[in-house]
Image (tube, rainbow, N blue to C red; front, side, top):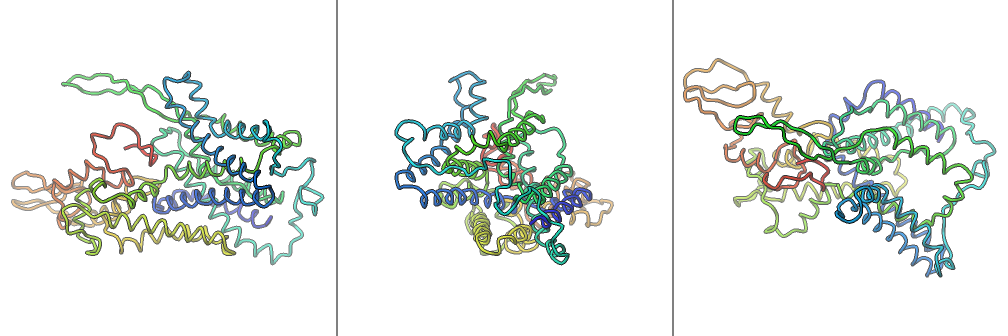
Length: 503
């Protein structure tokens, strides 16, 4: 393992030196990132169940029942406290803010102390195993460092393969986490330090290999939770024009308080609790509380995943579903199987898209339970070309434009394809009765001066009318608003809490 992590370290350095973020993640869409986020949620839930299974094997039935209550209670209390900021006018604002930001920590402390109260103290407990002395926990080791230099040369080179797989997993996990915790709704202003993050991650990975401990990364959903805890309200002044006069409008907006102290203090607390005196305190933690923490993190990751809300649409009667934009009904390349003969576009392509994401997630999760588990990052990466090359042959382009988008930039793959087609069109001087393409991609008729109502990047052959395009703008069915809940413009006053984006 040591050499695999050492190889992973220099591969991380290469990714940072050549700025891999710009030329790799630019091809990743939300199709793959949503699946990866859902996979993380399922893995957290599975880890919680495993902890409870171990408690069932080692504890009495009464103690096991309390372990289940402790796990579920830890999760529910943390979820409940995380909503404290909406309890106004109850408590002072700073009290509500503290309860929201430290919801998980408060819940963990309460359920660590609870088993020591009253008759619960008589129940047998399963707690975290910690070391009581400053020495390696493995009885086969006398020193902290792995003697990796003693490995035969052929095994050193052979360990490059698992090192490459670890690199792919860590890089993709880190990039998706960084994207999620810096999305528009957080209002971050400082640029992301993706390259420096990768260098630091490579260094810590190598140190873990030399020390003979598992490498630590796993930023989902901890990174978004960190961003959520730093959200605060600020007043923003904006100049507006009313009846020809400029006026200053003050409004409250929510954004992340950008600083370095919280991450530094988190790291310091981790170092503190791995020291022998404080490890004894850590050893008082019941494994049921750890299971509850896993449940909470899985729920937090799942609650902002668009797959969950599209899955709800699968269970919603068709009469209760919000209507889709008419542009989804008139795709010239749409497959007849997916096109509804009715006036309103069919939800069938959207449902099939969601079902495919769920099936792929389940398949990848099953793979993680087999001996082929180390290869699952490769399967996640394979979703990128699958989306770009294969899915466009199965789904109408307008449907893909509606439900999917680039993960790291504006628009969708279909927008880029339309732009490329537009750039390839010849331009000529307009004459009477002829049409020309203006630089903004709008077809215009010269003789009457009337604009043809075509969206940027679409040709007249698409058959879109001005009414359809206006409705598409109203419903937000553009590449930039992919995955948003389908509500009318008049209702868009609050940030989209479900999907983690502004409407």
